[in-house]
Image (cartoon, rainbow, N blue to C red; front, side, top):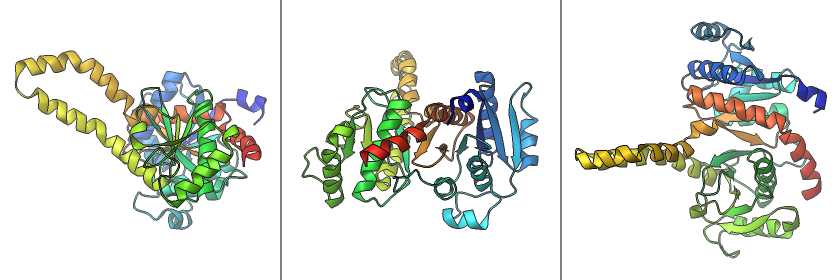
Length: 343
């Protein structure tokens, strides 16, 4: 990507029909992002134009930079990802991804069917040379700032060299977007010792150890290390990573339930909870997926940000910011260059 291109306003395609609350969340989030950023980028809403414009009419869009591209079909959460791409060629995901492929936009953002977005990105945009499988990176809070977990659901069955590639791509993202200097990369396992785990874990460990000079590999880490910040990047297969992600999403609501029960009817408990309200809100905010918005799909020839199906306008707003950061950081160009030397 040239410097001249980067000086032009970034254009981000937003799947306006993707989330559970589409297009309310998408329109609300985009309007908020454009207003807060003073039109730092241009949003292209992709989906049913009549539905999108009807929702836009309910918002104050004066002076905002956006456009609408019509797509007559919607891939639902219940559709088979790959089959849906063929059966619904005029879906918001396919139309938006083709727009990205053609250079009409610099990034694609969706809170829709994760499998379909991943498949469309891989099949339409293509993989970066040297990437066996793209990976989804999920950001977790920790005692030492954000920790990136890769893979969080793109590839459930992984070969050892997939995991090594995930580590390389995750390390670059952590450095460029999360601002981690020389990110520490750990391999998720059931113990710290190199002998622990299954055959896949043993072989992956050897790959990381052999190329340690090109990656800051610190060895195996355990599930308890995610929130302590023992590593900046934690590598695992998508099956394990997605379970970890979904479990983490349930923690804030459970803690809120327990705190509410603790307060009960006792006046002194309510007083104590009142005093602790602000610190608790800060802690919960760090664990709220809305604050980061969406997760990147690393390893494709483009920028794809994938959001939670239940995304709120705030989550969509932050998804757009993550897309902007990825374009500005030229993440994929740097991954492409890095893979030439480390694989």
